[in-house]
Image (cartoon, rainbow, N blue to C red; front, side, top):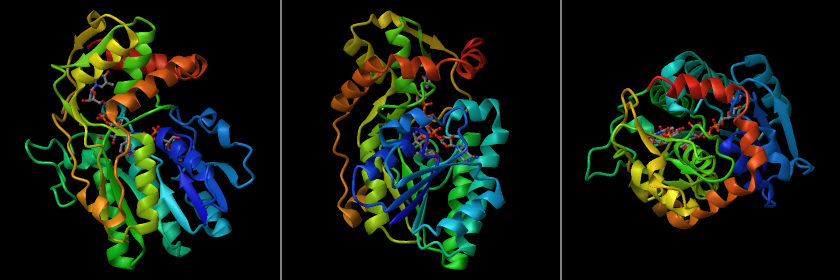
Amino acid sequence: MKFLVTGGAGFIGSAFVRMLLSSAKPSTLINFDKLTYAGNLENLAPVANDKRYRFVHGDICDAKMVNDVIAGEQPDVIVHFAAESHVDRSIHSPEPVFETNLRGTFTLLEAARVHKTPRFLHISTDEVYGSIDPPHDADENYPLRASSPYSASKAGSDLLALSYFVTYRMPVTVTRASNNYGPYQFPEKLIPLMISNAIEDQPLPIYGDGMQVRDWLHVDDHCRAILAVIERGRAGEIYNIGGSRALPNIEVVRKILAALGKPQSLMTTVTDRPGHDRRYALSSEKLMRETGWNAGMPFEKGLAATIDWYRANPAWVAHVKSGEYQSYYQRNYANR
Ligand code: NAD
Ligand code: DAU
């Protein structure tokens, strides 16, 4: 199969590219990425010399370029990861979020429609359901109640993608995953931020009371689920992908400090995130039933391996934390 992946230089996209190229499944894999602050070709160093791999530097909002690539390459499947993916940044600067997540998704869908791409997988998130009241776990029919500009843009792009199935019978599928963690994650997100700050003996900023619950999914489990949906999922359907390990943030941070042998006093309470969703928890029953997928990585094991990865890769961390990251960090944390 010929794969076109968007956002393949980011955290999850690069894990998917590395996973696919470690198998015989792709005949060609094109990675179309703008290389925003979150895109990093170092994440793809292990596969950069694979003859089946090609990198295209481009913006998914650039209709001509997107059209030319899809017309020229005629991929069998498009896996659409590219997005502005961070909630806090979407609160500070919503415009790029709407451009990339909505216009960019529209641009890709249009080109795929014109060139009759046989399969389009839109990668989405559990955040579209908003905060989920206990004791329920959200299934795919749970109402959409997005809280942040990020989650609203993802909910909008999900609906747009599904409308192409209903209206044009285009073979679109949507996946909605819970919070991912693992190696190569940009340290603006909870787990890598807390690991790297703790390693540097810097304060660990806990939003509000730290009792917000997230459902942790190892990135490799997520990538296996995406492949299962490509191979065995149905067009026009939505599949939740949860980690089945819902934990309060403060418990996750305590585990990180304990694993690193650092004092719990490094935790600092800061002002809460506006519109902060209290709880995410997903039912992945449909995905398991239809594809046979299961989340294989126990959270404690995955977290320990992730901590080891950050310890073993100080140069990667130093590089991504230099430059723009410093001004983002100031903007997000200085006045909290
Ligand atoms: P990321 O921020 O690490 O990477 C995003 C990638 O998209 C980067 O390589 C960036 O350069 C690229 N990109 C951004 N704007 C672009 C544009 N206009 N044109 C081309 N490329 C562009 O994101 P991630 O955490 O890997 O998330 C990937 C996808 O998975 C997103 O769609 C996100 O909504 C979804 N998702 C993420 C999580 C999570 O926990 N991280 C969970 C569920 C769903
Ligand atoms: O649920 C899936 C979503 O998970 C994805 O769609 C998003 O792309 C991804 O960014 C993530 O969103 P969250 O907002 O849940 O992730 P984040 O890592 O930013 O925050 C996780 C929790 O930790 C959240 O409750 C906020 C809290 N937090 C986060 C940071 C960065 C803190 O308490 N302190 C922090 O410094």
